[in-house]
Length: 371
Image (cartoon, rainbow, N blue to C red; front, side, top):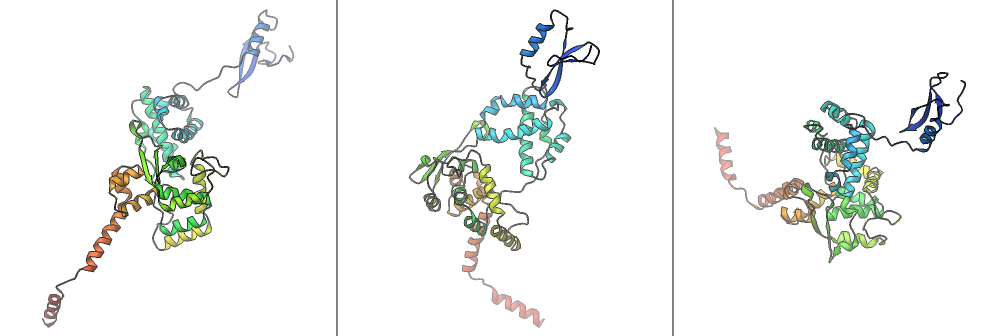
């Protein structure tokens, strides 16, 4: 028969006389059988195949890819804040790209261990990945695909707590930071709010020296918290140093508000790598003020703020109201401060009192010596 010279038509196998229309679907060649070239229906079928766009091939029902797409359309997903959806969607895409072909019913805890441990060098990322994967499995339970969540049997990796920044570290970071990064640190330190809320803060939310807004975090049941934060003079003075280029307190070099927290996080990482900052960290390690390998994040400034407010004499409920956290979390964040405050009070009483009974002790020692 020879080579068949009609666009997208191929003979398979060559010389067999069997014609196929070839086109790509989802990046793969697919073949549709055609009638013989002298068949009256050939030209009509060829025209239809040439003019019809290939049907989009979606993920197979019951796979993790299919589950992820269904989860993105769920009520639970839509109830999350836009920023939470944006952050978690990156992990959902990782799951789709790496494990989307797996069936939901085939997922076992030992497999999730391996998936989690692929990110073991960055425990924080591994734990967020595990949390998102667990959410997908809960959605699978809702759909009746599985009866229990296999991710519940896989523990998170240890990351340590977000430590408050030591005074020496704060000082050198404020000295070395760029003006906007410095303002970001002071905003976190003086407000005690999460980084996502700090980049949202607007000048229009300030009334009589108080920053009022609703926290972005959505808690169980769709609950959010309203906070009112008295603005410390350090904060207002720093704000006055920078031009007001945006409705938000913090903004990009272009003057546009920060869209995500990534830019601030990256600036802090670069700041921590500066030679003067590293020297202070090494000194703090040598003095055993911090542990070897300790890291300090923006969230640690939230602990600094909590400790400061406790030292002013505010109670747990008052501090929690300002920071938007429960009294239990306030007590957890402030446990070191409380220990120091107790020690200071005890020291004042001990050094201010008089230790008695020394004469009796001398008599006892003399008796023992003579005996």
